[in-house]
Image 1 (cartoon, rainbow, N blue to C red):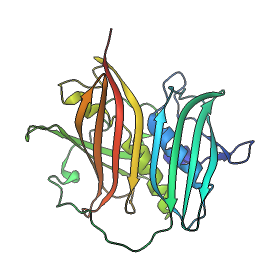
Image 2 (image 1 turned 180 degrees about the horizontal axis):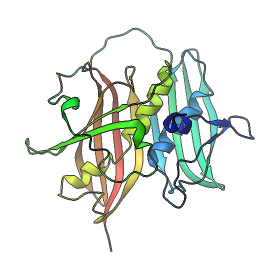
Image 3 (image 1 turned 180 degrees about the vertical axis):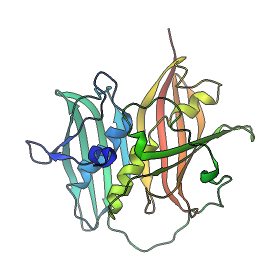
Length: 267
């Protein structure tokens, strides 16, 4: 069985619209933020009709979680209209509220479309297999191919992170979206420190994501190459913001992402 797919397979909870997300492990470590984002979205998807796809997700990290414990998710059905739905999702461990999220869904409709990039500067196949920008013990890295290139040649720090799943995946667009959400959280706030010559790996600052937002535009194919390109437009008061685009191999922008994170000096 795939560890990656197992993490996204929620079990029914004891309450109506309650779900249980499996632990990511290892015990005693802080849970990976991408797990909460992906599992919150998975829980919300379980409560909407199949003709509605997610259009946006906004999640606040309130407390750190324990990687070795399961996570309980509660979904509130905020709105169900003719073509759209809205959900609120809360996650807990041992009654401790960890995250709160809102997710919107809509039936796809026809309209103007734009959002395409020129071919990437690099062929990911020609790059070394770097893995994430730091240790990630909770991620099944044996099932993910991650290759990173950092670039400051333009005067602005840009992180280009190519990724793809290396295990067989079902032909289900929601599964591919969940994997994208899961992977794209990894060290995404790091560019806010890299602008100043620091990094989350060096642990020179207190750092971690406080808020994550994603807008979904087009289908993503998680078993093909995808490029997450991120920059940090601003930082102040011990917080930094990172924005990014998730780009398919054919140049189509499939999602827009933004994160706020703590990047505070240590006392």
